[in-house]
Image 1 (tube, helix red, strand yellow):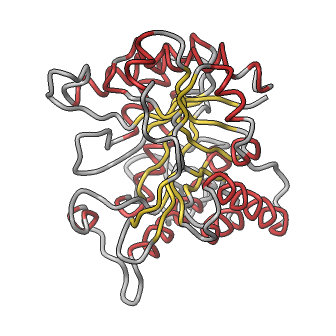
Image 2 (cartoon, helix red, strand yellow; image 1 turned 30 degrees about the horizontal axis):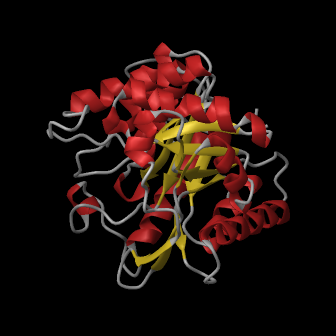
Length: 340
């Protein structure tokens, strides 16, 4: 069995070819797609966070709204860029959203990807401490968040408070028990995956990672997952960690699928640079009739290693079509691979 969810970037554009033409469309359609995915039997609704872009950016109102309208499906992010985050305020928002959802929040966080503007986090009021990088800052914010989510008091109470306090030091509220164990780190390198394991975070690995060996993407990603699990075991954690990978997968079962994805030119891995120093490998997409998809996906070592698969969806094609994309995988592909 494998958990299967969707991952949406929440793009919008005023183009007549788009069915998602405004921020309002992106948010409301995201809620509708999560509701539809739950009805279809999918396991997760996940959303990417990008700032200064026509994409989803402020996740917690959306997560809370989905939590209020669904009952079972996991609700998450993949990922929130920690360079932009106040970890204490984030702990409050996350705690509230998790309580509304009844403990279904799966919060993916990370250092983040190259952004739309230069040093965008500076506009949010953040600067790395002296002799540290923006990546160090993101990891520092993550470590503070993890500490706060433990729910232990750390703030000295006012001796003359406005409202009565419980005894001892105070914590941020609202606190949601168990959320600390549902924090995931989006790792692009093996080293950051190992770091996440030591801190007791689950692992998210996307369709992009640092090219560290020259091997095919899925093999490098599988190696990353195995390194993460070894580090988890060495750290002595008692619970079993979770690992997700994301993929673009389209089962060609009708004329719409063939028109949109039947001539895909992304059937091979690609190499590129996400900044001046980092050579990255971008994983291939999958688009084929179900029988061929089953054969192809059975050879993907990283999917086999992961317990959770996130299907990246083309949200601008509308809720109905994206629900169809999810349903096609659940009905025509997943059972043959033993995922259902």
